[in-house]
Image (cartoon, rainbow, N blue to C red; front, side, top):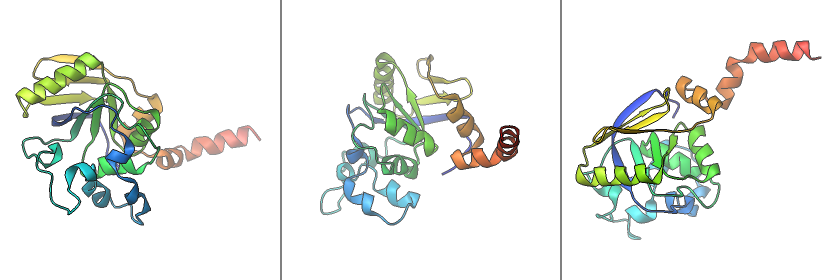
Length: 198
């Protein structure tokens, strides 16, 4: 979903697992879907962890625990490894997450998140560990993610870190633009450049 991104303040959903791959995020069988409806992919985010084979809920999985809520997913190191399926980013966005915080992202998945208006925030392992401890102590603890300033702050401790983001992707997120929108918005500049470089 295209949304302008500025500053987000939210509680977090903790997923303290390392090496979460795209098949765990959205199982391969859903790649055959003929729809790209956000609700469809969101409903099947972490499908095999959220539900038993008979469709009943796995009650102790974090997304099924009403204690944890918010639009920020805090995940373990090496999030989004495995295949390059964009469906994984569709599922994260479709569920309603706007930010994923981890100490390391697989490059292709990181770009897929950015292309789907989800902000991947890479932090140090120490900061990530502190976040997990904070959420464990108080599920209502909030985090602020400030895209213009490129900072993430654990409001419970006051600790902040800077994060990196490609300047072009930052511009697109802040203005609610996908790649096509950006080209259309710069159509006159492109036309002028083409005329000058004939």
